[in-house]
Image (cartoon, rainbow, N blue to C red; front, side):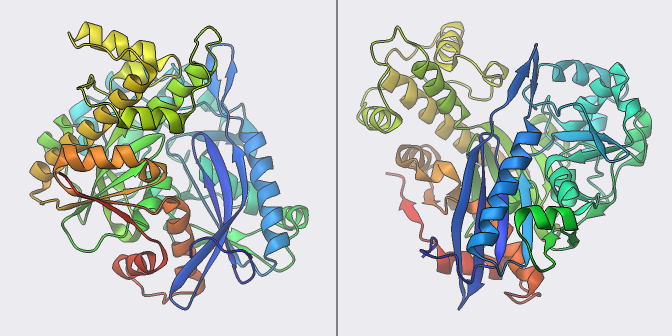
Length: 484
């Protein structure tokens, strides 16, 4: 039901940019069902320039432009485009021109940024301003490094990645609210730019443009862009939950208050949807975050490492020419991991050592040796250890979220790529003692499309999130896992 044989009648395009890949998906709502079809997929490969890690943003824009051209060829009736991406990273501009190549959030410069910010604003004070989980790569820390180097003085504007893409498509400069909330510079209290915090940090007050909410119109495709991608009629670019997790949460088929979500991909975003931010000292110490959601909601969650650990392990094994098991594929390893009946190591997947790219199996063994835990030896044991550790971290995180909010979680929804990992879903149910509902896989693109559909009138413009999620339940199947 979710993927059609033809793109006819699909009048919305979702540009969904992940940390490892991107896609362009066309979709539309009719007869109470959302139908969608991918028309382009492409890799998003970081670049190492000397010791620095960057995004190849020019190549990414070229790929998504080609994808949009394909979308218009297949579905010439397109009326709207929405863009989402990973959070925190940005491009610096001067007079509309890009300065340098955007840094990757995993770049090693961020630790210096943390030191610089905390020289002026203590961690507890910072939390009272922005309500964010401490992550070394939050935009506020990256800006501090740019300021120390003098590079920030050259810029008159900073645009987060999806806002930068929208600018190149329309010529309009805006910052979408859900992604703005990940910068560390948005007030958790009034939802506007925190001018006092920016003053304390010596950041230009006008560096970031005006805010725009999901569902608002950013602007029409500029004439040159429209010509290049084959758009005939005026096409609007619509603000969606441009932080990919914000769009994914829209598509979580929750029904009621006793639900939690895990948006599982490169990262695992584990949390609850709440009406008001939780900015207690206990929340800060537990390292939870309050990020903006669609329709004024709050995503009260914690970033937990995700399938990055598994993908980096596979990458290491595939490049290890001396390993006799080099030919093992993920499907085989998952099957072998599921068959293991003896206990395997459970480690802390959020340890900082696992953030940079590199040899994850070796790092896991090192962690185990340092903590007196028998390390995994075979590849299958490493895979099982990763998934057991993630499931344990999910269970612990949700238990803490319950304590911090007074909510009770009965059902866990896993969406995104991790919802296809049967072993991970089963282990999550077992470790948490709760029912798990897995799916939909393309939650981010679905949420992106639903906000557009509401904006252009394919669904009632007054539809709330509960009603949009009813549409998700009607359109996409889920798989149930019970603890036991």
